[in-house]
Length: 337
Image 1: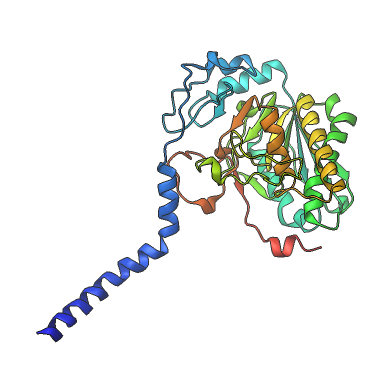
Image 2 (image 1 turned 90 degrees about the vertical axis):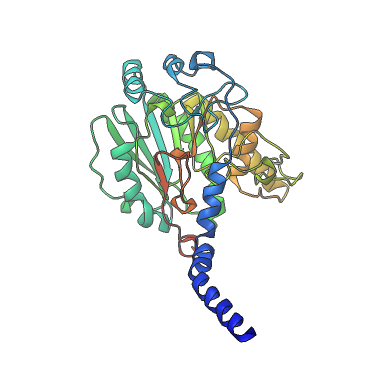
C-alpha cells in the first residue's frame, strides 16, 4: 500500500512540475505585475487650474482622469501621464506662443555608432513635432555623424568634445558642456532645452505637454518603490548627500527653460568639482547631483515613466504608452575605451 501511495505522489509531482517551472520562470514578471498594482499617492487638487502653472494651457489638465497614479506633487506641480491632457490643444498653444526647443545629446566613443542614428531618426518621428527644434550633438568624432533627413524647422549642430578616459567623467562633465553651450548659443535660439542620454529610442509622442520651467523625470525602476529604497547618495562627504527626497529622478531626461537648465547644470558641475577636490565621487555621478538639486529647487513639472521606459521591467498597469524606450545595453563593450 505504501509503494502505491509513493507512486501516486510521484505522478502528482510530475503533473505539477510544469506549473512549478513556469512559476519560477515567470516569477520576475509576476513581481513586476505585483509592483504595478501597488497604489500610488493621489492628488488632492480638483483641477489643473489649482496647479502652479508653467503655461496657461496647463489649466486644462485633467488631474482626476487617472485614478491609478499620482498626478501632482505636494508643491502643486503636475505629473504628466497619458490621458491627462489634450495633445492637439498643447500643440496649438505652443505653436501660437512660438515655443522652440533645443535638444542636447552626447555620442562619444562607441556610443555614436551604437545609438545615435536610431535616436535621431526616432526623434524626427516623435519629438516636439510642429515646433522648431535644434539638435545639439556633442561628439569626439564629428566626421562620423550620420546624415539624417530633417523636417521643416529642424536643425542639427555638431559640437566636438574631448574624449574622457572614463565613461563616468563623460557623464559628469556633460553638465559643464551643456551650461557653456546654453550661454554661447542656445539662449539666443531656443526658449526650452531638453537633455537626453543617447542610448534611447523615441517610440511615441513626446510633445509640448512636457515643456515647463523646470522638468524632471520619475525613474522607471523607482517610481512605485518605498522611499527608503531610493538610491540617493548617502555619503555625507559628497555634496550630493541626501537622506530623503520627494521622488527619485532619472538623469537620462531633464529639461526646462534655458535659464533653468543653465542654473541646474552649472550648480551640478560646481558640486561635482567640489567632490573631486575632496576625492569623492557621488554614487550615481551626475544623477546623484541632479537629485540633490531637484530636492532644493523643486521642478515645476514632473514627467511620468512613460517618458523614459525600460521594456525589461515588463507589464505595468499604469503604463498605457511608452514615449521613449531604453535601448539594449552592452556596457562591457561600450564603456571600454
